[in-house]
Length: 174
Length: 457
Image (tube, rainbow over all chains, first blue to last red; front, side, top):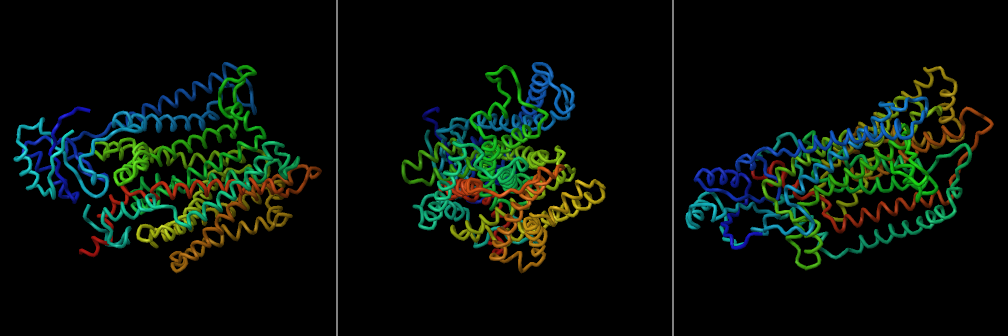
């Protein structure tokens, strides 16, 4: 964690005020570090200019890997390594491999995607999050602005936030 | 977001604020266990240990302790297995299918329903594992791992093996889905915690969640994709469970209607169990504002629909047995209705076909007492359904010389009791230490559908 960074933290108590505030703050040429909300606020990612998450592509790729691995495994085990005719079926009877193939696809897609989500979002047991305001997991929406990444002074940012509807403005140092 | 639907009932009553939601749900986690909870836990542990004795004896002496005979090779074990797996289905249905259909009413009940799924599947897994007789070796029969006798692999043509893959995938994916949903709520408890131990435990469980907009965006995509993955999984699991029977040549089992009929039955019994648990939970934890009569009514409607599907399936089975012209098939169904197990068949018919039809009456489907009684009746009926399918088909098959009757021993009953003890011990532990309602999701629908907004208008 970097130390000595100063943040201006605006607290909002309504999601629609926050959405308008993000628009306003970004419109005043201020770079928002991040917003923290107790629940997913729809449209906030668009207002913050975030691109659509590509995590579903990861799920698809993991899923395809699962399908291939499952079928290769079953073809090798039942058809090559120990070929045996069971119930009059072929050595490599693709239809009876479908259920296991499907399950392994889902398993890998789900676990791969969730693993990717944890890694890219930096979520891990005993992960130490930066808490800008403890109420951001309860009932308040928080907007954090990094002073070092903005040319405006703390007072100017305070004024912009106040104008945008923040109910409280604090300074936080990490 | 500010629009409250003029046609739909409010989802959360009592003019709740966001902070009220956190407070109402977290206070049970933060408070000391109350006497009601302690009593319930003691009873569950009692069942767990009493039944555990039957399990221990079975493991020690073998499954000869059960009432099985040369004809009825499956009875209570697989009945209990299919019953518990079925119960699990409502959780995934509520969290995944209703999420895909954008049904906001799921938010108050999805957490507990998912927990129920996980615990029911654990109980279900127990039965196939112990019915092998030597569970410590069963990994060689279920899992494709090289064994000490050479590279002899498991049989991928067998529905029992498909079952293993289906149930274990279902369990793991449901567990992940459930846990992902819990992370933001664990962060709320972590930030509210006043003592060091709670802070450390919930801090570890919350994985360092901070509620950043970017993380929420990814989280919602993950939830939606997981729902998309879990939905076909719900259908596949019980379809595959039905293959255990449908791919055989036993009269009464060898029918193509089994997959959809099993899935409908699973949802039917699953919702009944969700209702049984929810009615108790809302009362004990004073959550009447979150789990409203509206929620209960909607679940009852699902029970009514799936119960009707099950009823149609029973009649279709009878019709197909007659229409097929196969005397063995015809006899199997005649024997179910009029043979020595007629009482089980007619209990099943009464509980599953007639009882859910009572929910056509609004007065009944909005009555807490009627719902509670009927939810238990449905679960009894669904247990009988599995018993009827398994035992009545096995006890009289092609060879009259091998016909026999099955009656359970106390070990059969004991292990069933053990599974109840296990289920309720896990559920009560969950209800005490985890938030029983998904706070983040309830907060996200609060504004669009709460009583507070309604009143402001």
